[in-house]
Image 1 (cartoon, each protein chain N blue to C red):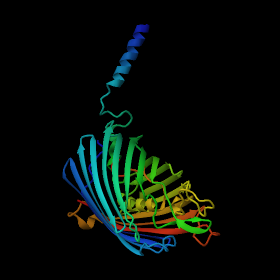
Image 2: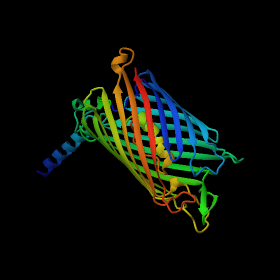
Image 3: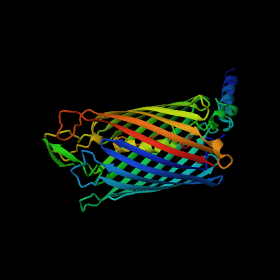
Image 4: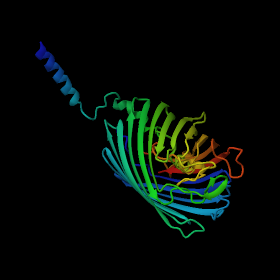
Length: 72
Length: 346
């Protein structure tokens, strides 16, 4: 009984490890259509952000770790 | 489906302005992005600004009322399957200040594009030659950054960023400002190094097509003892007229003063300044960006054409800064930020 349990656990762990990398765990490919929406990005318009970022850098002491709107 | 994509073939032309505290900036910016190949993309940005400074702080200095500044940036992107490499070089020139930056960023997506890891490094070389002085100072910048963007569900996406910056040189502060010692102006002095850390987290909720809500928080700290919190709330949605889209945001910023900042020091110290940007203050920003879809007028010459009008108000309230000669009243001012631009995607 103990051997069978160990075998089941081992097979379960192995199957988890061998899940094809192109298979998202919690989001099916057909559910990703929203990402094609041009307004789907973290942050606002890049052109608008560029000028506002310059204002913030000139008037405040903090800098860096701004949101990346171009690549996500 | 890959999250990483090359920038679209797009050009934009912008007019922008800023006014506040008797200082104003007006300028324009031209951006061109072009992909000659499915794996390659190049971009160029050129910005020309005219700065008018009539502020109280620099009135006694040799700084002129009017200056011009030019900035040119070139970018190259290389995309190969799930990896993207971006190289940027930029140069900025003002009569008293020249800056050069070189950046390398790498992005790697995993889990079918549901997460993206990024890392980057920038190196900067600046030269300062203040007006009315024979002084010439070099400033070095190093910058390292890491990021993780993760799709949490169909409607939620998150992003984490960390950035370390290190500056070294003889002029890390504004050379035209003074410090106050027992009510008398003296030359401001700054440490010759500055190291800072910034952490940020962002959450995006995709509510509907073209309707997105974002919250972004950043914590900043440096070895000048400045700690800052910045929170930005953003909501973008189409209007009833399908050609209009409105993007609005509310931003809060709160920071502590640098260890060597004093509104009016009573004892002399190695470093001392009366720079309001290094004082303790908060600012609130309210902004909107209206976008008008003009694509139907330009078919078939362009894929998408958008006209934008953006405006933001920023209210600055200082806790321990007052203008020289007006010690009783804490300083505050309002700034107006305007942008008008057109983007063409082809």
